[in-house]
Image 1 (cartoon, rainbow, N blue to C red):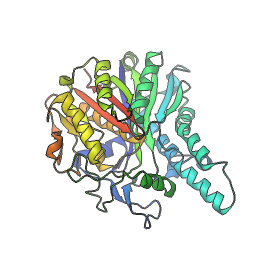
Image 2: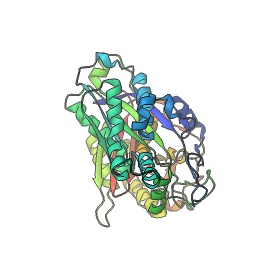
Image 3: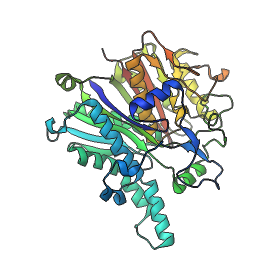
Image 4: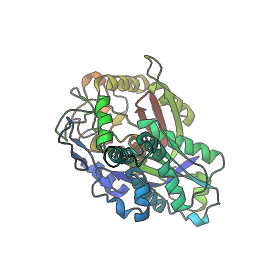
Length: 399
């Protein structure tokens, strides 16, 4: 069994897992006017920026020209996660620990710099697209190098579903003999090039009010807000973690992924397969961390899945990313961290922007304030990525 022993977080409403979790329970949002670039000429001018994150404080100056913001955030978050787990890299087998992360738009800012150079001073980069693709794996590589984690290293690209997909792959590596894996997802696309792509996609809310722009399952939902950041987890084989006396936040009981077919959404199948992998029945689930797309059609699809699995208002549902915006691959990773801390502290964080779920959805949405549950043992985390990706994870509280 895989156990999560360390959590690192960088989110728009808190740097570090403790600061972020406190903000989540207090219902404090990190969504506000964009400051990282001049957004005055764009129809959407709000997002979820990391507060006070200075790149130069987290990476040697000699590496700054060769890294982008995603890599720098990932390095800071990985350091927190490993410290939280109390891992001594020197004491690990030489190839017993590795890194599998997810990113849906790694290198967006590098691509932006490449385009600027191409237009202004000549082509410093072969291709903005090539540089962006390269940075998908750069974060995992830099984490491996810095912490001497010489086992399996790879990157997953499945947009919002990526954080769960990376966890599933890391879990498979533990079953294959690895002792420890760093996994999760980090993303950042808050630059003109990345923003243009989000606008072209047409899924962002056009509301100018940060407190009302991203409203999952609301009758007036009109799209989401984009943010940056995510979470990384230290995942260990349970027996190995127990031998070194490591604290566990929760167990990774089941994971699954599906891909939508033409006119055939398959989120429900992902959830059912994850439950099957965990050896669990739907009735054992105590809380669902929903994908929460905040678009009418997508919300209807997800609420229909929840009703089919649990019945109308059959289980508490929450979307704490309403306080951060959707973070690409970092979004589902942050939901995993939230679910683990919910299990650890026996409390469900709220969905803040939505005051009341629309009656048509018939979901028991936790809004306004956290909900303390007397026995919170099993959480289901759902994610959907652009292009048809669906992922689900079942987490259990520590025995």
